[in-house]
Length: 114
Ligand SMILES: [Zn+2]
Image 1 (cartoon, rainbow, N blue to C red):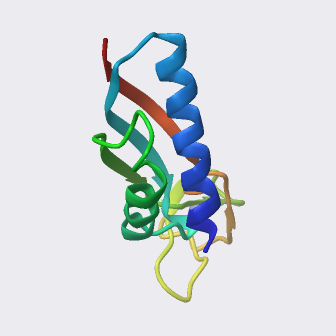
Image 2: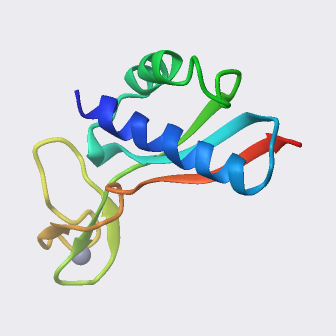
C-alpha cells in the first residue's frame, strides 16, 4: 500500500511542475525506482490511473527506470550486486554492507505540452 502515498506525491509534483511552466498537459513522467524500495511498478501505474484521472497528468505515460541494490564490501571497498541469501563479496569473500544504492525513488523528469 506504500504505492498509494508515493503516487499521490508524484501527481502533486507533476501538477506543481505543470503549473510553474504553464503547461496544458503532462505527457510523460520518468521515474527512478530502486528495487530495494519494494515499490511495484504495476501498483504505481494502477494508483496513478485513479489519482491522475481528474488532473493535468491524466494522459501522461509513466516510465520507470529500476536500480538494482548494491552492497559495499567492507574489505575491498567494491560495490557488488547481492546474490540471494548471501552478503559475501564476489571479489574477496569479505562482508558486504547495504548501501543507499537501490533505495532511491524520485521523479527524474517530466515532459509537458505548453
Ligand atoms: Zn570485497
